[in-house]
Image (cartoon, rainbow, N blue to C red):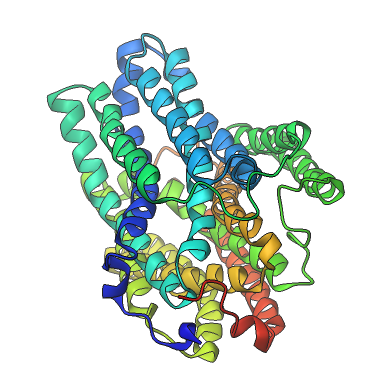
Amino acid sequence: MSDQVEGRWAEIFTPRYATVTLILCLGVALLAFNAFLASISLPTAVQEMGGVALISWALTLFLVFAIVGGSGAALLKQRLGARTALLASAGVFLLGTVIAATAGSMEQVLLGRALQGLGEGVVSAICFALIPELFPSRLVPKVFGLQAMIWAVAAFGGPAAAGLLTELVSWRAAFLVNVPLVLIFSVMVMAKVPAHSPTDRAVVTFPGLRLLVIGVAIMLVALAGVVAPLPATLLLAGAALLLTGAVWLDGKARDRLMPPDAFRPISVVGTGLWMVLLINVAGAGSAVYLVLVVQEMWNYGPTAAGALAAVLAVAWSLSAVTVANVRSKETRKVLIRTGPLLIGSGLLLVLVGLQLDQVIVAVLGQLVIGAGFGTCNGYLNLTMMEAASDAERDRTSALMPTTQSAGNAIGAALAGVAANAAGMAAAASAAEVKLAVVPVYVLGVVMAALALLAAWRMVGMIRPQDAASSFAAG
């Protein structure tokens, strides 16, 4: 079988795959660079328009609509075909970008960010779904490695570019960087992405109630991160009930958003989705608080603190590229199990570094966390793609980035509850900040441990036919 032949890095840049590779890279770049461009330019926009009270909602609405869009992406692809769905969602993202960049008020910025999130959620999910459709499985780890490299470039280049544009031109210019990216992406989609696959163009019912329930649940999660611990706990409990209800409703629906075994620990796909969710919950707290904490404790400037945070992205990229050539199925299983172990160990190292005021230990921890994500992410996704049936592959693939976003949202909210309960908001000294950040990292380590359990169970359920499947021979 062709998938048993080792894939080469050069192959994803050959004429057969180069255009598709570029399309997927642009799809990831839209999300990666937009995240950093917006985070750097929004404070200036807020100062100009006087909307400080609304700044957190710029991220919240983006995230909520991205998750809703990603949840419905598989059905949208099935109804419209991949090409039309990508062009339509890219158009929504472009409209949101223009609205935000030309805003005269914070309310208009929020509308633009919501549309950006909706469009980006669909683009990301469909790009994931296209990977097993357009690449043989031997090249899938290379594709994920390349995507990790884009995130690393964005982690360093995005803030610098956004800062320069905001200072030298305008915060609006930082938003408008997305315009040429979207246009190039759309042209490439029209040229290369197939109009539809055999399973597309089906008549499907609009899953309005399920998308509404998912959206409200994620909104409650986001709110939990900014209120007092007791109401936050109630909000998270309500969100958990709503998300459970959404999965239950989806299982009863004729046109499902998710594969039938989504989040059921009885299959590779169901357990794999739990692992995806948990590793992102584990890493979110450090991602939210590390920059703030080192600025408060060690008097780092934004650039130095940002560089410390970006070390994780570089380690993720390097480790993903390093393991992308692994051919042994047994070694891949070991890598999947190793990822959560490294993530938990890295979080402990960062915590120790913060408590002992040892920068080098914190940097080492960031490297280990990044290596954990890079080591397991590609083969985790590939294993779920291979384990899914042909009929469920689109739903499974599209649900992966949506689950990652949900994990980040839930993790950020849980970390907010933990930090606020420990007195982070009222911390007035480095010692108080040092104490308040402890539960954030303890929570992350616990979630990484749960992810390790999910990984162990998932790998144990992989059947030989799953590991040897060839869903995209060529």
